[in-house]
Length: 59
Image (cartoon, rainbow, N blue to C red; front, top):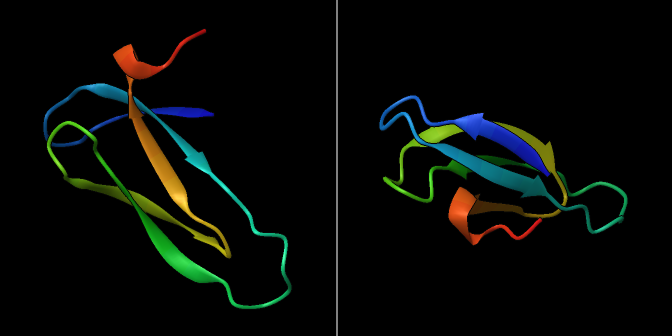
């Protein structure tokens, strides 16, 4: 799991990029802040990107 800071609201959050493990079919998926919804970059993946508020992540 990766950690980043939102460029709009300044809150830290975690994101996870999943991969379906299939050849081809990759698309650009965007990383949206779970607090304010601001777009915070993107990754090319055949899966999904999940974002989590820091307080929702259990160690």
